[in-house]
Length: 256
Image 1: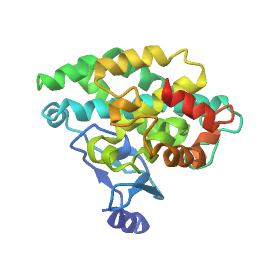
Image 2: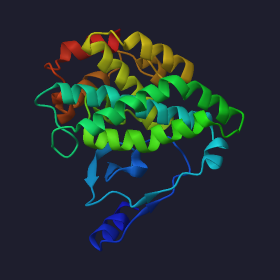
Image 3: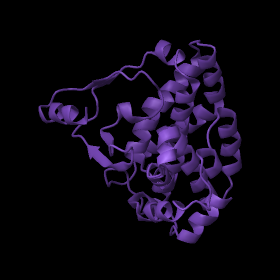
Image 4: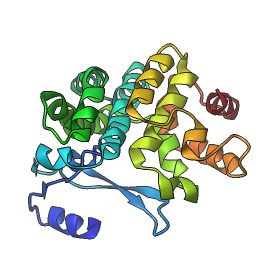
């Protein structure tokens, strides 16, 4: 439990994490996302140190549902696009309030490149219950590269959208974190200039990841949209964007 991990950190005990899925980048991070009993995003807990060791058995991953690996890809793909805007914006900050590091930015970029080049092949390996070099590389990208990248590189619109999508019950009941992040990434890319949005959308389509509101059981006409947009606009990570994130800009992005 989070409480138990906090107690161990206070006692300076090293933590070993052995995830059975590669569905997100949490295992390597010192940041634990908190949710309410209803599944709604409720903030984050920052531990004094990262896990001392993270062990992922790809044989277990190869036996899991491809949907979990795809969700991890969605979560990890955002790492580069969020880190990029954070380092390009002189006012951009990492999750701990520091300037993003060059190392984290470089790791974030190779994370995205790995996913783009080997993600579809890795998903097929899981469908076939086989361990392949592509699966090994994508598991590393989902777990390690993305974990380091987001923590020291920073977050932006992608995670602001994803975290607040949890306020809609039918979304948090049916969709995984990485699937919500994938949608948030598309919204962020459309808000920027759209140059990479098509490339990422094509990849997400092959990976089975959401690219529009309809793919997470929502539409711009839903009564929850206004509250969702308000929460996104109030999220501190949107200030890492190199321009002001406005309601009009968000509405246009989610409508495209």
